[in-house]
Amino acid sequence: MISVQHFPVIAVMGLFLCAFLVEIFGAKNKFIRNTIVLIAAAGAFALIASLIKPVLLNGEIISYWMGNWEPVSGYAIGIGYEIDALNMFFALLVVTTILLAAIYSIKYMARDHHLGHYYTLFLMLSGSVLGLVLTGDIFNMFVMIEIMTFASVALTAFRNNKFGALEAGFKYLIIGSIGSSMTLAGIALLYAQCHTLNMAQISAALTNSLTPTTVLAFALMFAGFGVKSYIVPFHAPAAEAYMTAPTSISMVFSGMVNKAGVYGMIRLVYVIFRAMDLAPLQLILATFGTVTMFIGVTMALAQHDFKRLLAFHSISQIGYVITAIGLGTVLGLEAGLFHAMNHTLFKGLLFLTAGAVLYAAGTTDLDKLGGLSKKMPKTTVCFLIGAFSISGLPPFNGFASKWMIYQATYEKAATTGNFAYAFVTIVALVVSVMTLASFIKVTQAVFFGQLPENLKDVREVPLLMRVPMWIMSVLCVLSGVFYNVVEKYLLTPAANAAFNVTNYIDKMMGDGTAAAAGVTNITVDGATLSLWNPILWLVLFAIVLIAVCIVVLTGENTRGRVLAKTENDSEDGKYATFFGGEKSTHSHVAGSDLFWGFKHDFKGYFKFIQGMHSGVVSDYALWAVVATALIVVLMFVFVH
Image: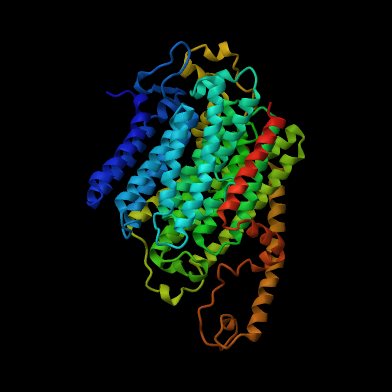
């Protein structure tokens, strides 16, 4: 019988091997191709799921040395895989996403050509992300990042006959390569300083003090993982990639590719450098996260395309995750992990419903849709569950994880006396209200209202596309209702693994290595989730009330615009149907109309932020370089 310590490597290599087999045997035969893909996805899921008991429930750490190349004279020479509760948590997200995306793709991609290439790239992307989160070797992590980047670029441009697909792939390539280069430069500097590539040994070697070389390495890798997690200002190419890629791949990008960046960030700041006890670093991460969540949601409000709107919401929700993990507390890290998991579920679900709309109606333009609940009731229910979840409404999972974030930021402000964290709490609540407003717009524009004449023959999508949506819908509800179970068996073990660095080092390098190097675990507070904090409820109620007032008041501008246009419109113009006796025309409130007044009143901000998103790749590259330079300066000033 094969020992469980081999399972992680078999799962990763199995995905890569099946990518090779698909290209050889499945390029011409649909049945063989689909069989190989489903076996690979289901096999990876089963192998990782089999590690739940030893790693998450029993608290074991699994180590594996490729080729049995164990450390020699205290130095790690070979490539090691090390699975603790932290990367086990992310591995579960990855394999769940792989399996559901594979099932969905069978029917969704059936109308496309060159599917052998599609599934080869899909499995390569899957194997690289899984390998990234499981490896214990920092250069092996970089190799997986490179495979992930180039597979993502090719899949972004896979439908190259679609307008903007090749351009989106090119932008992803440029910015992704900048991120990879930063990561590689940081790794090279660490190797020059520590003479090893094993993350556990590097962590032990960095115990005594940080030199200018290691601080620069930290800053470069911080920026590199920021690119991979799509935080502002590295986010712009991601929105275009999400929009132009096949929707099954958009789900993968949102569900696991950006989580690879988040995992790298956590492993970097909590384990390798053990720097999360530094208050300035906590504030830097929280600032990046807060800016990301706010800019993401405001850009989403301005969109007229279903998938592009979801893309900016994905960026916004990652802001919540980065903010929470930056707090440096157990509750904060658990909240960030919980929201990362929930983001995989509800955003994956929303992308799948957008794919269903595109498959059935042929468009994701909000102004060309409407009334699809009459034709696609099952998809509508799944969409509403996803919308309620991402908006943070109880009892869905988004409410539980967002409430943890509110509580964690509020407690951080109370314990440190730093008002900045109270401001973060307010911004997080405001962003949640704006998220709900955005999805009211999508619900009205796509699923309710009048059904356009050209969509009268639309019907529900095939069963294989609905099954993944049903599964994710159920998980969104269960993880919200039974949040305490999720916290006990998933979040707490993962958070403890991040803080208890000595166990990670000793498992790979031998018992006593951490103590000999002077490594101690970070002393942190305990985590207690309370859904009944009266102050937070009062603040939430006040912000919702203010938001409703703003929407109602700015809505007057929308009605004024409608009436003014009607006076000059022809009898059968768009707005004529608001009055009795006119010719009947299709005139539902479209995606560009619902919050027109709100956008008009804040047109200065929207004009500025849309102007910054110029669509020019050299501008985005400049953002990345300038942001990296700023990060380097901040790290040299505050992290030492």
